[in-house]
Image 1: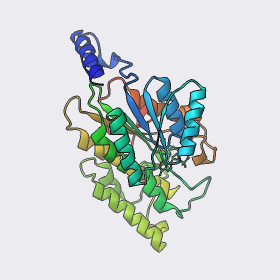
Image 2: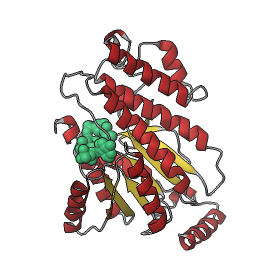
Image 3: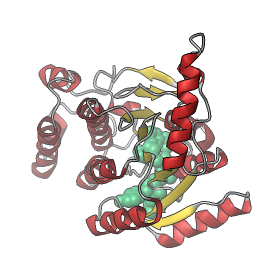
Image 4: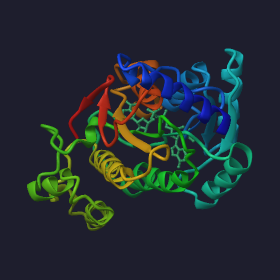
Length: 310
Ligand SMILES: NC(=O)c1ccc[n+]([C@@H]2O[C@H](COP(=O)([O-])OP(=O)(O)OC[C@H]3O[C@@H](n4cnc5c(N)ncnc54)[C@H](OP(=O)(O)O)[C@@H]3O)[C@@H](O)[C@H]2O)c1
């Protein structure tokens, strides 16, 4: 990796010295030595993100909570000529995360790209049950947060910056027309990146979960559609912005860019295969964000390769 950093530095220096050349014109910064970790890589959008990243020539570590399912996906990809690495990883299990950290350090010395794709949803069609709200919030928000905290110290120095891509959802928008928190003051606090804090996010989530427990959530002013899922993704979005702020003062070559995106409504198990988009379309913006050639872009929300409002 050190060799490839100094090679990229050298190329960057030459390109910068040609004043007519925009640094954004530098493409294909990655190589086989670039290591990407994808959570929930055994199926759906995660599997397709793994496939596309591997097809671009990146070393992809496909992770899944169930080794059988993960190894099956590795086999499936090998049949289309792609060679990926497998490791077990349950984002809700700290001992699994710790085993993964040790293995990653020992075998790859760290990572360049983290794609937080693992997620769950229990509502389909017009359902809006909160029966599994705690599990949804734990997985989609706290699991993603645990992975970000665990991986940041392992992210490799790089001239182009390491990248974190969080697979989120437009359902988690703060100011969505039909699906938002009704408390304007809370929306305001969550939308101001300066007032954002882990405590603020935790308090909103724990208030919702307490209301689920005592049966008062329906009048709590929470998002109206897929309430638990929407709130979990709203928290992911807020945490993306918070982390981008916290990581912004890292030195040159130690930069980590963190963004989130909505894959659209995709035909996967999570939607009961009822979406409009294919997994190829759903993975596209995530892979694009992971591989942007020069990326001072951080703390933003994307869909179809365009920035959208939180
Ligand atoms: N499909 C859509 O329309 C849509 C829209 C917006 C956002 N998203 C987001 O896209 C991401 C991928 O969803 P998908 O549609 O591809 O759904 P999916 O096919 O159900 O895949 C979800 C993946 O997450 C994994 N997972 C769940 N809990 C986990 C845990 N504790 N640890 C590790 N992995 C775990 C699942 O593993 P198992 O196979 O073991 O269950 C599976 O691999 C999710 O974050 C989802 O919220 C999807």
